[in-house]
Image (cartoon, rainbow, N blue to C red):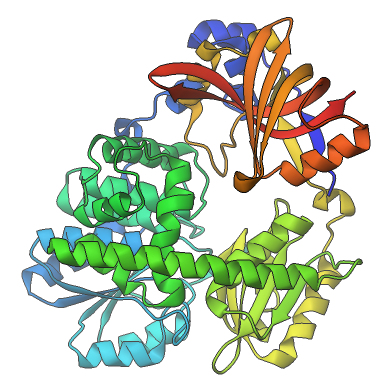
Length: 572
């Protein structure tokens, strides 16, 4: 797909913002593009701190949950944490397990097997946990849609606390939208219609951290770091309280890499003990290893790593996570390549694809890759033991959860949120789902076009180390706070080194504003085709318009600004 360059326009008074906030007009422009225009919101964004976090006790159900948990601890009732197999669920489980054990609780955890049991609560597990003596069932990162399963848990005499961040089911009434909630003793989910908590986008790890802090009445650097990992890996909006959790959590993790000894073993195994750990390292290096256990084995192994006391166990588990992730990468690449090769020229607005050969554990990743390649919402369905299982990934402007919820009669089970969902259904319902979603979809071809949203056009003289370091204050980047992108025109490419073995391009740019270094990852094929089309040599000697992120590169102790190229146009 040809990428559109969209340069944002703003009517904000950038000179005034720059003066009031003590930042450059360029940084003010970036912040205005993210609707950070008032002094209060802008300063809060620039200086996130735990002191400005919201009061967790205002979350609906928090008081009741504390009372129930306190009673269980005092009377030695067995608390069973029922988690989920992704990084968010793993971290939320670990946070509550550690905090409750510190308080002397009789507590254990259970995470369902992705392949054998699927997502969320299941009746066989509930009955077995009851037989094993569980008296309090605490669900984390699941439970909000487990109406039948929680009803059975209650019939068996268990107390049930649901801690979830997914959208509840709902029904439309004459008085408006009404949530469909399980009959638990307590439901903690800020997305309930009547929950007064001002921030609705906490992931399960963030919610678990708020509950842990409320229980113990003090902050924990270790648990905050785990919540930061969950927040990054679950791809929730990095604004408001999520930004605070990630910023503060990463600071603590970088100041003490062994803040959690199991995590420290994984950091060591991945070669990051002496490297800064940022959102990229979490999202693409460490997170996938933690996730791989749930995809190709049991996610319990990741929790065991994070609570392990024996150094030998920690080393063994960390190595196993790395091995599983390598295996997962190969399976994913094979499945994605097969799926993309089978796409036809004329694509549906919503892609509903089935592949009985694909490993069901990587359905979500494959759906994401197809979505990125086509620009279309994608549901990728695989063959389960007794039914078809799938995962969906959406695009901005298409609420996947609500679209699927309208046709919930087609599913054996499903859950999710606007940008992602998981589902189980019978094979004969797949074409019915495809037809229903596409019949109702109002997306246009314009919605499917790949685009880069550029914050500002910069002259070469504005590309400097001071600006790069100032822009770094806006990190971490992710959903809701994309990395700032700029465009500069007619830079002269003095030289380009093509490193095919690493799929990397190294540029030396020059202009009247001086010389600049550039680097591009994954653009080698596009670059070769562009050079051929323009009739220029790949080694350089031509002009180029460049879209890039600005970053600080440190080599041999010397810092310099570097342009990380995202797209380009050759100007012969």
